[in-house]
Structures are given as structure tokens and as C-alpha cells.
Image (cartoon, rainbow, N blue to C red):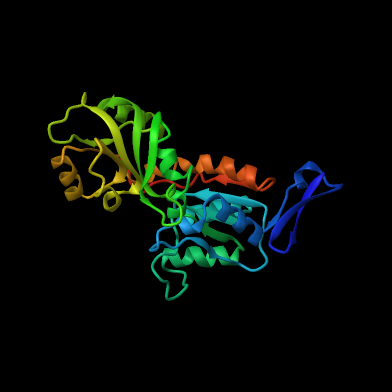
Length: 292
């Protein structure tokens, strides 16, 4: 049996219909507004920061989503991968359109991405800070390697105190700084992280409370002074110095390492919510930096 998604008002209703096609053709397609509605329900855009550019950013005409590709950053390589997969949707965690575009040309790579997506009828959706602030979003995933007794957003939403950017968490049992870094490395599958020990602290110093923010957390974490350790992707030199002088240790994992692993987690959720839509996580997506 096949599911066919029919629209009734604002609802997307799955209906079973007989199929005479082979298994290879038994793939659902969902119209773009239905798919976007599911994305918005999974991570409401109201949670996103006011400065962010989130939601449906590229909307070709008459798109029906059969296959979607998840990526942390939308590069030309990822667009080629989406075309080769026959994808109709790219979910890019970071918005490919942030600063206003004044033209769509072939030479600038960011403009060429948008042109290519339109030419190949690929829609682009970016959740960014809506994912960061959501329950079971990026920040909760980043901290999922710890046993927690309490977790609160650092900057709660005006409408829901349980969502918002950053997290201030209390561990069920205190861990040493070394134990914290070991947990983080294992969770993010990293060989090393950068550590700045707080003034008067050592690798054996106990940590009970952690402030965390995926990506670039300096501006969010600077108000987090009642913790023993800050966990994020990157902070400026002076932001790290300030935390250290306050006796707070800092763990930096590099920007996208604190985000990219969430894609697999979200892919599983999306396969359940958008039943029948094929969901891929990009194999071309990778951070621009390497250690030499």
C-alpha cells in the first residue's frame, strides 16, 4: 500500500491507496507546505533568535519532497550531492542566505548555490537557532553525554521558559575537569579539545555545573558566572581570558564539531515525522579547518 498526502485546509492527511508499482517506486512525496509545517512543529521558528534568518529560504515552484538532504553548511559540494541524490529539499543548519543578496550570479559561490538550487528545483530550509533553543535540540544533544539533575536555558524564551539559547546544567554527580573533557571527546568523536583551566583549578578539580552553547558561545556564555566550566565550539581570546580569571574552566571543541553530530539525531526524528520521505545526512559536509 502507498500513502498519499492530501491537503485538507491546513492539515496534511496521509491516505492509503493501492499500488501496482514495484518497490523501487513506492516512495511518498509530500508537498512543500506540508513538509515545512512538520519542520516548524519539530522546532518552532519562534524559538530562533531575532537576528537569525531561519525557515524556508529558497522556494522553487511546484516542489514535492521525496528526498531531503541534511547538512551543517550548504556548500557547492553539498548542492552537487543533493542533485546526484535527486533531492528536492536541503535542510541546512546554517542559513546560506544571511547577509542580503543584491544579485544572483554565477561567480560568487554563495549566489551560485541559490541559482543552482532554483534551477534544480531544490528547496532550502534553515533551522539554525530554532534547533539550538528547542527541547531536544542541538544544545540538549551536546550535553546528552552527561547525567543531569537540572537543565535550563541561559536565555529563556519570553513565551516558554523551557526553551531558549544556551544551557545551564547541573550534573547528578560532580565530575573532574578531566572526566568532563573525556566525556565530550567521546561524545563528539574527537581526539582532542582545547582546554583553559580556570584560575586555581586543575584537571582534578570537581565540576558540578556547566554552561554550554553549541557553535560560537562567547556572547551567550559571558553572563554564565555560577558554573565551573563552559562548553562551546569557539570563543574569542579575551572571552576565554575573562572566564579563566573568574575561576571558570573553558572547553572549546571547534565550531561545527558541537553541531554536526546532531544531524544524525534529527534525521531519525524526521524519518518518523515525515514518514516515507527519504532522509540523507550529507557525506560532503565537513568543517573547513584541519590540524596539520
